[in-house]
Image 1 (cartoon, rainbow, N blue to C red):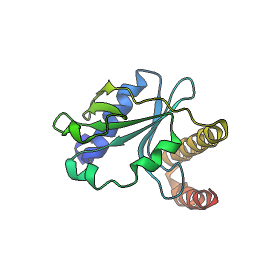
Image 2: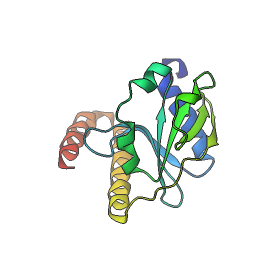
Image 3: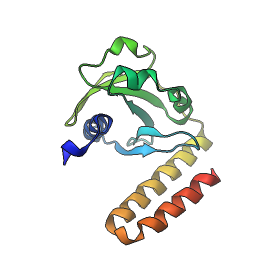
Image 4: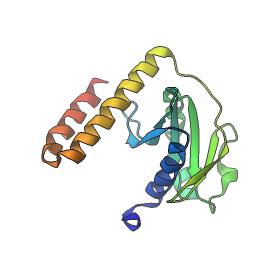
Length: 158
């Protein structure tokens, strides 16, 4: 039920819904590299990769010390916030999405900084593997522990 979701998860849900209208698919809480976990990684119809960080409050934003490390793992970077968020806190050279639990709107497009080919290949493979594991876990809940163990082992690889 939507009421069971945390504020950031509600924003991610609205953003995912909106991005689907552009042909994007997305994964929440995606790990592009060890020590990093983005709120939303979106894959576009032309293979573009966007990172969206969902911030539900001023404190949520000011305590985030890792966001600049996400820039190396995407073609475009966005913040997703609700209408009450003080957007003047957000860097002007990043994208901005206004969202709620039901939808979103891109207010400012994030600047494009295309990934190098080798990193793009790695990210596309990681995205596909993560999506497939999540689908398998959903379709066959009895193997969830085995999949979690695989995820832990693959995150150690790289």
